[in-house]
Image (cartoon, rainbow, N blue to C red; front, side, top):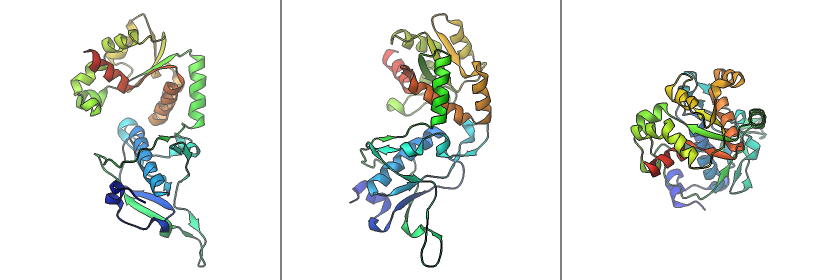
Length: 274
């Protein structure tokens, strides 16, 4: 059985002929890690609905978030691909079309693979009410736990500025660039912390440069001990090698700490209190 939304995209096909699902993307660089993870979860839902095994997409990560360098996305560098669950059920994925052994020799299972065109924004409502969970890779989680413990970090806040301050975002019915800018300035950040019983030692995830005036203003206040990537040589080294890896580690820091405010929480607080 295939729901109407999927049938309109894939067509009325006999799924019993297929074992795997492959998504066909346009050539070229894809978006950043967070965007590609969101899309991966969407395709995992589709594969689960169809009873197929997803072949992990092969795309490059956007150079915009990695010092102008585009690199291949290898999901296992950031996630434990053996931990993937859809609605609480473990699911298998593969990194390439597996081989099988027909009478004439070793060949890829193209005949068992359903190929679908990549969906484009705005993504359609697929009417797939599944929760997808993927654990971070154990290396990054171990690093984050040791980092949090050694630096006595109790909270984590994500401040995203740069492109969002210019173009805004579609969350909460749409927020303009100027409003996003104000939401991510010290006045709103400190107010949010004061009114949500924040701890004293807070790590700030951010895309700001080390000399950004926002960082300087946050450092000047005395109530909270803010820590940034730029305070830690080991994080700077990772960032210089691959900014997506340091983002993955910071996401683990966010997951570990008891007090956490994602960028959406920051913006929502501003909208509710402006």
